[in-house]
Image (cartoon, rainbow, N blue to C red; front, side):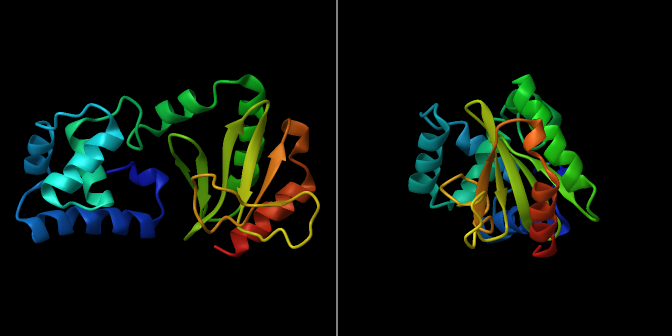
Length: 190
């Protein structure tokens, strides 16, 4: 289970429900499932997921939970600081991240969740996320572009479908009062 400090209350309940449902609905504990998963002949995560689905009929979420228990990754949700260090290695990108983080965490009731490929900000729902890109940082927001020239429609970023727009932040100075206003507007929707 991910670090509860990086999850909203709603996300914590969801993970607990997946965990509880696994044992209740399959008759096996997570430890028993992890032991079965260690017999997997595959070594790549996606191939292991496919194997768990094919061999045992587990869905994506349960198979992922089992595989994380069987093969704990070096950097995982349960180690958010390690994930952040691995993600934000470029000093310029880290400076942008820190400026966005500070602006987001200045809003009430914000939970920062570190993922492998991005950092998420949530209240009840995810309202923003940042990830490093080539010589910049991409900021996803829960506000629609609505003809705003500095916002683009969200692409396939791999974060929440609630994030409707994105913008590229080339440096720390790009985190302007306008960006902070977008963060606030996104926060209000969460």
